[in-house]
Length: 279
Length: 355
Image (cartoon, rainbow over all chains, first blue to last red; front, side, top):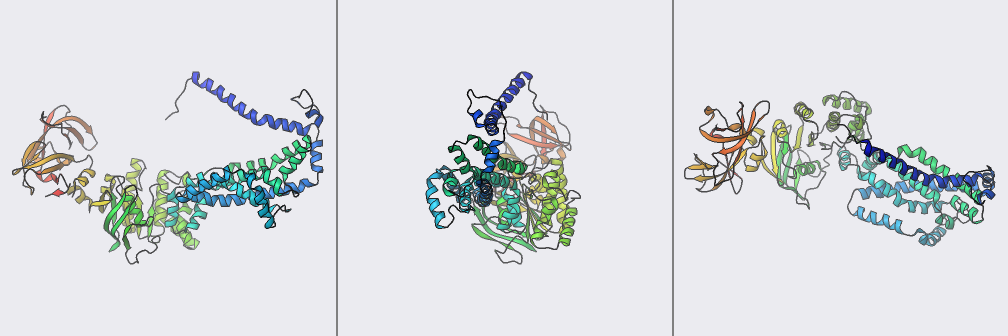
């Protein structure tokens, strides 16, 4: 069978439209990034110059130097990385369990979806104070290790992980599990030896999404880590004190780990790998 | 020896499907086929035997095992969609059950290769299912079932969506394999050709119940119900409204002298297989005229379709099909002959056979 051949009369305008749309979307993403980079790489005087110029005149690394001169920076980077990694790992593991139960239908599915949507609909900041009090009573408030924040981020990220993984688990045919059961595997064994390896691409995707969620999270980070700050509040303080240049430099630097994670795990990010299981 | 006894098994789904009060004895080493249209309960029965579903009532007893014992060791199943483990190589797919049983790895290697050879899987053991052809996947699924040396192998539409040629080839291989291994096979299909070809014993199911069980020849030649007669056979059996009229039986408006134990005027259904109608007058004492509408050549014979002649104003056209060895011309009316013994008579109300 050959693909239907469409005449140029239809094909050409479609191609033009495709290119135009792609260009618009890419521009929407790239232009703010460009402006941010320009701010980071030029003296502040230039940023506030009128009329604003598209091209930088005077390139400098002074803003980056200012960022690295701040003593807090190293601690904040380590803290953000740890909080991101711990919360993403926790949310992926717990979210996988929830997603599996949801994918297998029944009451777990209804309750799971209600819970997941509920958490996502809740304005998070509304529970920040109670969460802070709970963490304080556990001795986890504003600690240097920021474990308390990691726990909160993990809780926030579970719905994201569960929704990402749900489709993957739902795509695993029931019969594969039944076959494993008939082969003599216990239900726990089936989950770990069959389901998890099949959805491992989705696990990577869930981890990445949860990591980025935590990396960018501002509200809880601001309230729960008042003195042992993570990166987003640090960036916030730069901005409120009017240090637009260093703030831009830090913002640019903050993108690096997230981009690295996506590049590293990107190829592995897929939903369930069930190809070939059936005829 | 009995391998398995099913006693009064009932499992009804909210949708209304399932099995109703099915009892069945499966002998050791036999090839039993469960045949029926979709939704007749054949797959449900198979899943109940496998232990993948719980019956509402009734019991399944394995020879020499207490009821409710773990079924998995004695049973293996080949699923309709094969259900191979997509993240494992063919070798690991087959080895999975043995690994769980902590079989030493040298023995695993030996048994996997032996099972693979048995099902004709000579290469590709190191490949994932996605890299295998449909036929190879089928063989992996089969080897995975056989490698544990189960007493009973269950197969759910196992050759389902393969292309016709491969299917026919695997059908023969499967039958030879079953005889060679001496295992008990329970095979579910909706394909009556496959069922007749493979079965030692054939159970025809409908609405969650077994309509008839027996050797395929008996199912074909002596169907107990109208449903069995119409479901088995290709081209399908011809059915006509009939009734008892004195000492005769009136079939499609024609009276034939036939003795039958039914009250006069009773509504009957008369069936005759297309192959039992012949254009050769030596083939039977009774005759029927057919206005031929179409003739298809099927390779070995011709499938003739038409209506019963002469047409009468007081009734609809009665379609009829015959299989002949010579070409006949469409558009003409010809006389076909048949043996009265080849007529299957059923009670019109109950659908049960009358003899």
